[in-house]
Amino acid sequence: MSCPRKWHINAKDTIMSNDSIKADVQANFGAHAQAYVTSASHARGDDLARLIEMTEAKSDWLVLDVATGGGHTGLALVPLVQQVIALDLTEAMLHAARAHAETKGAQIRYTAGDAELLPFAEGTFDLVTCRIAPHHFPNIDAFVQESSRVLKAGGVLVIQDHLLPDSKKAGRYVDAFEKLRDPSHVRGYASYEWRKLYESAGFAVEHTETYVKAHDLVSWAERMGCDAVTIERLQVMLLRAPVKAAAWLDAKYAGTEAATFANHHILIRGRKPS
Image (cartoon, rainbow, N blue to C red; front, side, top):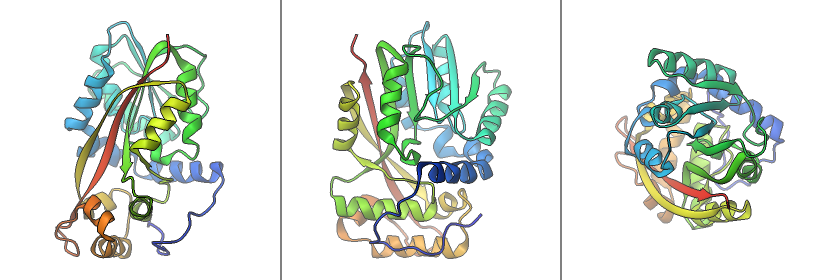
């Protein structure tokens, strides 16, 4: 698979139906499911450990990991809770995550489902987690509202995802960079937008923090199947980034095989009222 060759840094977002966006997600991640199981930036790191710490998980909890991807969050939670249910829109991703969990001897229940229409009864879970996935959701409000619905009173929602700068212009540039690599990327959100999403769903935001992840540009792009032309265009975007976007991306060795950049993540914890 190749990323699209047509791109416009300052173009308005293309309006797509939710079904079309979700079909792109399934196609993109279905084709590269195993790469996300083995991806070092997803499988381990201080950010994953910190997310797990922020859950303050308890041994009698029932946990839902939404858009589980390679299944790494669920695997990390298994020793700490009673049961983990891992949900993903993409069947191929679920198969890859299940196979990986079986090699670890982990007992996780896997189910296919939509983050914006969770197939569970109201008040089922003590904890909902979602790591590095909501930027793919066409209706982020629906996901946060659904998380609230399936949580018990006093339940906790912990999310890690891409973070955009507060500057809207810089944010649009960073989003365009992400979307060039991965057409199923819908958009990221700034910290103030995340807080509003939580509060609009009735959550009390208890804690937020940010985390910066460094990436090797070429391997990051190749993991999503980008061809040489698209990788070159990503290099150009790093080289030509406006001042605020350039500071956010913090590119090094741009234009070379050794190019690196940074993306920023938010970790946010909220509690449903008791």
